[in-house]
Image (tube, rainbow, N blue to C red; front, top):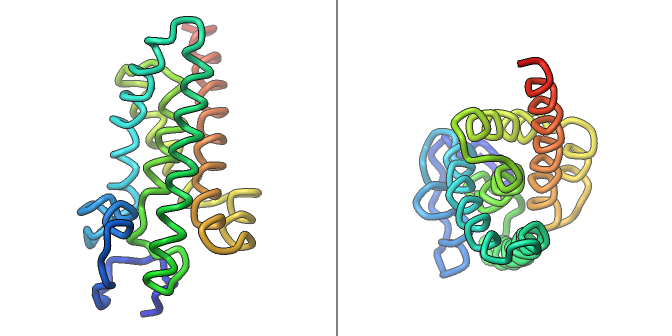
Length: 175
């Protein structure tokens, strides 16, 4: 199997490890044999909860603090992915799931932490991340290096948030 293949469920040689690669795979989630991206996405939910709790301390500035913290995690993730891909000499390895953690956090940060929104955010993000419609697929295929690995998940998180916003408004107006 090619190291460029997103299917991590088949046996492949273990890559060399360093601090960055452990972060990139959200160890051990990215090493799970089935659906590592889905497992990685689950970690985005408590990350989002933590970001929202910290942001709430800022009162009226909470929204901007949330955006700042997500931006910082985006830059951090880009750095970790770039270091890991260079170390492994690969691109968009399926075991790298820090991008899914970020994408899920993006959609989860802007909605209540109730069962409906958590499940809907998770399902919508996974749908956009797996099927990669429009600009999500373009970013995945065309952007080089860590940018392509990360930004398709950032865009998937934004798309999922927009759909969930519309769905929430629709249900709010009809219930």
